[in-house]
Image (cartoon, rainbow, N blue to C red; front, side):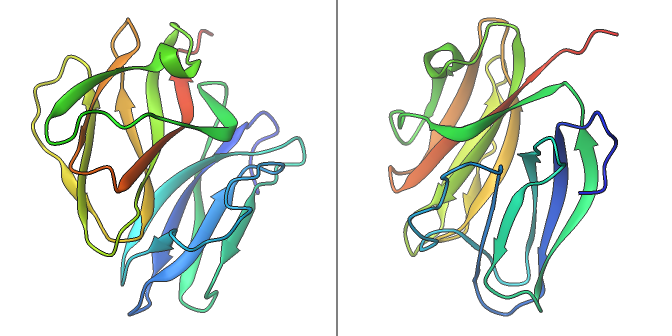
Length: 186
């Protein structure tokens, strides 16, 4: 990645101009995420998503694309000190489905100093699933569909006690903590 010497991660734009679902994967060097296969990680038809990933000392991350002619990855930004990446994303237990539920990031080794999360979320079935995340103090009721058999990265703020809210329509979705954010002091 072409980034500043003190960068610790990159912000990517993933764009598909393909009329079909296409498999893709992005991970930190040394991660075993998706080592077993790519059966449930696709980008939707004619769609795009953003992704954050940590980079190593050589400014590298790993990416795999099923179709390089129609799926492209663009570097659009970098992170420095404010995002702490998990080499292995941490699975979040499914909350009660069908309503907003509070979840505690401390349960998943996120320190109390954290102020936000990046969550990798995926729909594991052949139908779209509603899934939403919000700051623990929010009453915003929006939740959107994750297209069938796709995954994305979502960001949300967390309360001072490390709580966020999650809405999950069904347990045929999965959520992982990919990274957390901290305040940077100059």
